[in-house]
Length: 82
Image (cartoon, rainbow, N blue to C red; front, side, top):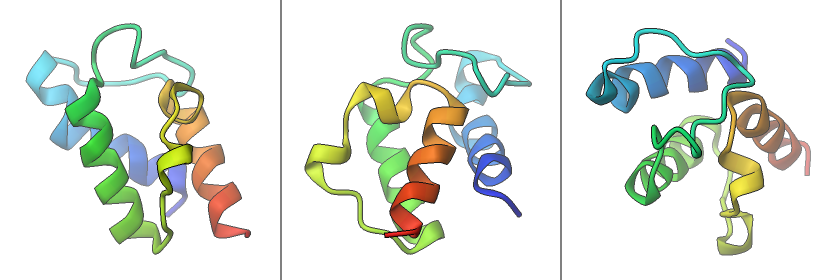
């Protein structure tokens, strides 16, 4: 399964459900919509580290890596290929 698919399924199951969202677009800005907040980012970091076997450093936790599903997927791919 691709990182984009796994991230989408996780966010829908664990975060979006609290906001009544049943679907997400890959280029939808989840931060500006308030769908993902600081606690959501912490959940995502934990999920990314455990699910993809990568270490998310403090300097990686910037809005540019977590705004959209596409951004998160690119970030995971970049970290996996290091």
